[in-house]
Length: 307
Image (cartoon, rainbow, N blue to C red; front, side, top):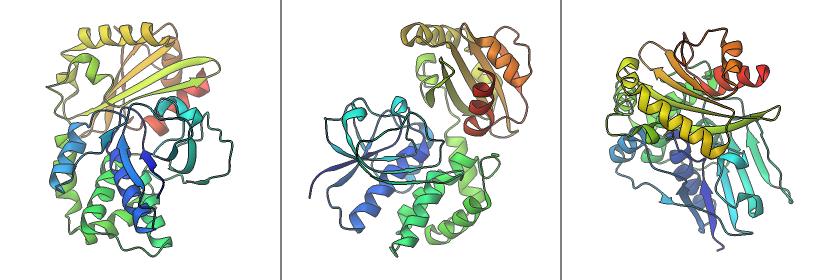
């Protein structure tokens, strides 16, 4: 069987790592024994907690893809967020819950995208459609992804479908959603071991709007002020990133998972776009964003609208 590379986006979060593993499981159960999950970056602490909980190994690191290699994309479709060489790969499938951005193929493919809070919700539907039984650990991975992407159902990206699927997965995995969910989210808020450069790259994505290149990075925490103690180092790391990657605007969102708010550090020659988008005045490159927790629904769209 020909090899198929399965992976999510760069700066991988829980959904992108677990969905790669789950997609491998689904493909192999459908007879594609050449399918294998990969990751495009370092596993974060939240995902590490999940993999340890279910006694699973992290996927192998993939730094580039060869021309005409067969690939399946999960949790992304943008080439800017994908592996180096993706433009010349043979994309077989995409399973995603983001807007379609900078995506083009030379041959037909299987593409499924839904406006739900998590890729895992769509993967659950694919198991059901193909009448494939979901194993306990696989159910746990999918449940973890939904909890992560919806911040335990508090994010505005969360849909009723996400909640319904999570309940079904919790039954299979035999997990108390609230208890496990809080343990899992708190595991991801320990940022003490990371350098400023690592922090701004933990969960960071590039976008473009009206010729403006902008980057939005996000970290979750139980205490925003703890992260802001390293503000000077964070700003230095952001400025270095801006210079190296020719970015017009960089927004670093520090999200409080307990109170569902964010503090933003904003830098770049177009930072006034962020002021306009959120109707705030930056003070010392900072702004408090009450109720903002979702990059996909509450940050990216408003920046694009005001670019």
